[in-house]
Image (cartoon, rainbow, N blue to C red; front, side, top):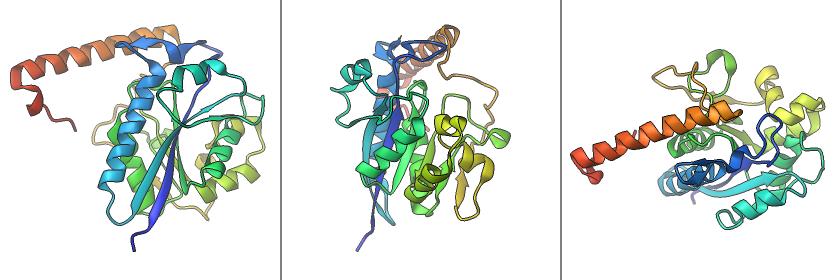
Length: 245
């Protein structure tokens, strides 16, 4: 009988970012930033569930948000059927949101995405999920600083339940609770198994995550130029003859 592994793709979101409040509601290409991330997460869910072989993978997509952040709820309720509210009013204790999410959904793995990465792509998310699950790894990401290949804005982390429970017990510093996985990255406890997703090309010097109004303008330009090229390619070759990698 094929083993079924349950994976929760979780997107952390809040309305009032310190550097750029309301950034996840900014519009890029007629769509809010957070909806770009949601759509790619849902697309990754569909792909992973359809393509897994050695193990059957069942995915859900959730938004994790701070207490009483009604704007996140109202903006995402129609697009996501699983919204999980923090148990604490400390907005910087992001780790507790992930612990709650993996516990209440009884997931074997949780995928950490941030809502300020509107250029994140579905196949990158699914690559991380398949790598972790099919190889029985506890932590898989593309964010190790010293060996990073992907640009800032494509960040994905997959954490096993046992690694998340270890973080629950051992992450006591404020910074570790805010950044969720710093202990796993910096300490690398020997009881856990690790994987790293790399790329053929090194684009690590690029920044396309959304932290400031200037970042927003850069992302909008990047998105506009990309969509323009896709439109032109469709006219040249026909939409059905455009293949993404």
